[in-house]
Length: 319
Length: 267
Image 1 (cartoon, rainbow over the protein chains, first blue to last red):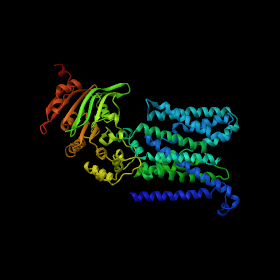
Image 2 (cartoon, rainbow over the protein chains, first blue to last red):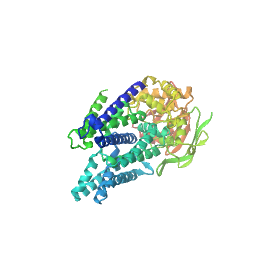
Image 3 (tube, each protein chain N blue to C red):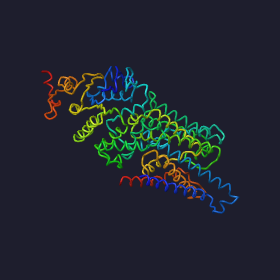
Image 4 (cartoon, rainbow over the protein chains, first blue to last red):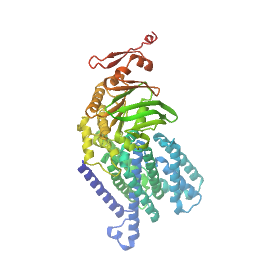
């Protein structure tokens, strides 16, 4: 068992390394190897490098959030944006743009929007100090719908310029505008994932049932609160820097479980590796398929991800 | 025989509606205690109160001399293992991973399971005759196999007390007897104290050393099966006509139903 596990992890890491190399070598501008590392193209190399970092940070964060929510809610359809984070972030950004706030502060507005909407969802679903699983899902959906409607309303009543500024939010973009922001987000995500990892055993217990977890001595309500806080923080941070990239947080947890099993001690690191490789490959497609114009990464993650997922699902059912 | 758990005039339940009203009881080492009673009588709630899944609104529960309120849920989980009615596991953990989860209350957050934990888990699996299932996935097991694995997980907690909430309600009679035989064996050979909520009065009569009959949140009667399972007790609580006879082999009380007989009651 352990040997197979090691082999799988080595194989996945090798794929990730290849994806990183691909992410650096390929871009919307076609450069040969020697050209890329020449002095005059230092700028491009730098841009590609930070882009790879953002891809890894965003992918790992989103997949871990998906894992946590699927375990806590024991719902296979749970994903990072379920708690209203995406629509909240979108609304924050749209409001800021409509008010004419400088573009550099838009990520901040999105972050605040995401946090506020999560708090709203959380307070709606809270009853007598406990968070009901079903009511959390429902209030998340309802807040998302309401906020999306407000976003559409604001967009339809404002001028075109604003609309263009917001479109990359809704589809996701891995272009790095602000190095400092990337650094802050990376630190938040890395610390967040590390903290989640400390709760792997609790996640295992909760994923077989809250009642079971209680009787294994897990303080379920407290663990849920901590993890939900971490998930909203990580998701909000990621959204603020690269917009909404769908599918990764939903599908990678499932694929990782099919590869390595549901034990969170292995599932969390494997998901980080797998999602990063997936994101980098998707980003390569996004940049090169119709270069020099770029396809939104969210489109690629969905188009590439769906068939992979279906194939794996069919294979696991056949077992 | 030492007292393991003592409930002293406890009240409790969910939100504003108390389910358990003024219950006092003692669980001694080596007990095989059955809790029976009509639906809504508070059986499961009493079990959850005693395992600290919920806290009593009034009264005290003492576990090995300590107030249950003052010890945390991890410490409780090292002493009390709980097997719920139906365990539905959506994730395909292996049997081995599930049983090792029984070690969670004994491990600190960052500590991985060691040799000792592995040998305890292995022993738990062999006690429940489930060692051959070790590498199987939990979602591939039959109901009977799953039940044995869940009991193994509880044993891996190395508890003094094992609580079970209607563990046989979804099993066929073969697996019911198998499960309860296993519990009886653990009770006798390993001196594990057992508290079990049962719907089936005859299973309770066959296996329990002592029975508590619970009605409307209070203890209606307690004692040996023969003392509790009388037709008077059962007819007055379950509102149905029964005849109580002894099982010819085990000589334990056996409750026989008389279908469609409302008239007898008026006699």
